[in-house]
Amino acid sequence: MGKMDAARREKYILAAEAQTEEQLHVKKAAALQYVKNCGSYAAFNGLNPMLGLDAAVDLMILNRMCHGVRKSFGITAEMVEDSSLSANNKAFILKSMSKEGIKYLFKILGRKFATKTFLKYIPVVGQASAAFMGRQMILTAGQDYVEVCYRVVREKMLRDLNARR
Image 1: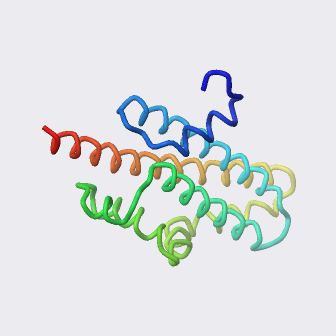
Image 2: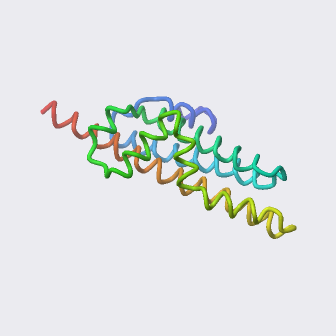
């Protein structure tokens, strides 16, 4: 794995199943890097001048990011149900898994999307602010999502370890 270039190594880490806590930490770091990449895409989307299209693209970036993070951690609905997460965190993961996930994400971030869209039409400063807001919105949501997914998988890993003893 040491001879792989960075992009290939990151894809491998995200695709491979974590067997140890150390591998899980490495997977979390790779997932956070993936979230940063998605944040960059959202920042570029902040320069999109089409009214409404920017919010739709941001939601699509957020939806795909959540799907990618969930897939890399191997999260299933049963794992989330069995975890000791709070009801809000369980809803965050479970609703993002369903077809209603985009509605749920828009409900959570609706005001930020509206503010970003409004700021976009202020020349120069507004576009820069919209790009920054889009990036921060995706980063914050993504980092929270990675942390919740990490906790679910870590809890399952520890539960499985205790069951073997």
